[in-house]
Length: 163
Image 1 (spheres, one colour):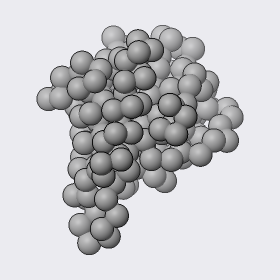
Image 2 (tube, helix red, strand yellow; image 1 turned 180 degrees about the vertical axis):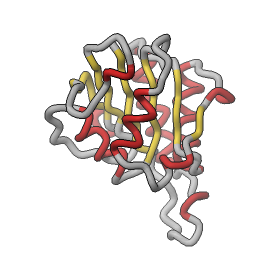
Image 3 (tube, one colour; image 1 turned 45 degrees about the vertical axis):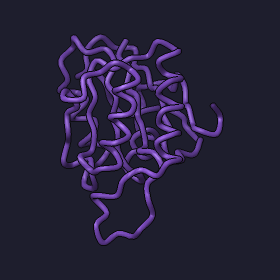
């Protein structure tokens, strides 16, 4: 079984879009990221690989999760296209190229593409994806190349208000 954990970055400062790439997290965003990642740790969910948008808010969210889950921050793989250009197919191609030794991959990104990815990877998903929403999707496959649209099942969704 392969597992993809999709994370929408935590709440970011709303100072405008003149320098959108460098927007950082708010205090609430930091608190929410710690809350959700601590829940994952309690549930025994750990990444074998972390892939993130290089934007400050996504990387800051990923670094909080990694610290709480014992993942080496220097091993976070940044994907430039995850910032604003990635399509569902782009995400799937990145997933399909993973080495099969990896069982659980975390992907940190932005809306709307990150929500679209969740809707695309599973047969049915109707929930909202607020900031710091974390969705675990399981695929009944042994090889990443076999992961495809609508082939996964939602194992869990954690949102800050529900924890």
